[in-house]
Length: 421
Image (cartoon, rainbow, N blue to C red; front, side, top):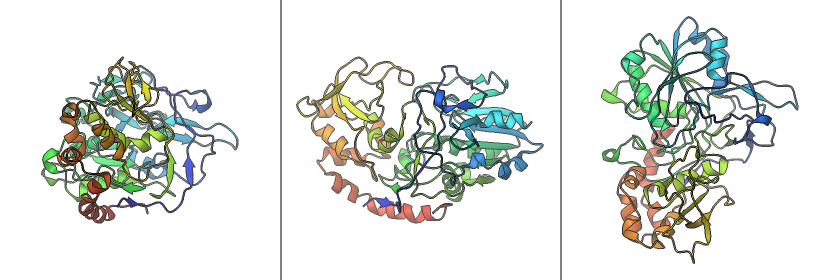
């Protein structure tokens, strides 16, 4: 079974957006009218007056920053919502700009995969740079420098971590969190996390990672969908002593107000280039497995993680087709320029668990089953078992039944670190 936490279907929506500019490590430092932005995740619903994000609770964390030298781990999602009169279009201010305007001394900005502006390809090397307005150095935490070095932390007394996660084990922002916590612990730096909702926080599902298969797309023994916010996840990393040598980080969570895990939450901005909307984010835990196969998961289209296809899938069964193109955030997508047969899932119902049937059906209907999986699949799945189960002809129900003991154990562990119901 899938562990679900839905108790209601209220939709809390923040009407923000941010443009995904092409300049590396540069931000627009002015408050922005979302009605003028394109390529964003927004809704026609009004802003909920109840949900308060950690970043907006300035009264809780500004006193902790006074007369301190600060580092920030952030990207395009590190936003503060500005209050606005009724029926006025809301605006946002980037966290960096807000703190600079308050004379907070920011030493360095650290950016994760996809860069500070969030426009780089998955796996693309991110270069260090500078924020054009403030001149603050931007240091990449991707590629060879996943963990802040002591010289990059020199003089920093407090680190702020403010990234929007999507609740999947292979989404690398939680791996960045691990390395930041480790670096802060080793260098006696307090870490403050400005907590944000988990848009996939309503369920737990998937195989639990085996430690022997730990990688940057899965570092810890957790299921694919873990049901935790960044703040809760940080508490788990500390409590389970997962960082090197079991050292623990001096951690301060700035909690959200009026948030619960059964909250259906639509993000105000794309968390990364290939998750353009709430449908893609909801389908991501199911479709990301295709990244370890010869099937394209919508990269190089305008429906990333909402369609899938391959030149090797049976056209009689898969009558939807598309041709991946080179686009920002997907410069060299799988099967670039080739006609792919597949399925369009953009109108599927909201998922409350991982759907394995799409993956199993694609394997069973591909021209060359021996070439379907690649070595990356084992990293995404957290071990070799899932591939073996699919190759052995097991059904989705049979496979999911093998996860339940590990999921029950994880649920008990997870309960110790929950901040929200």
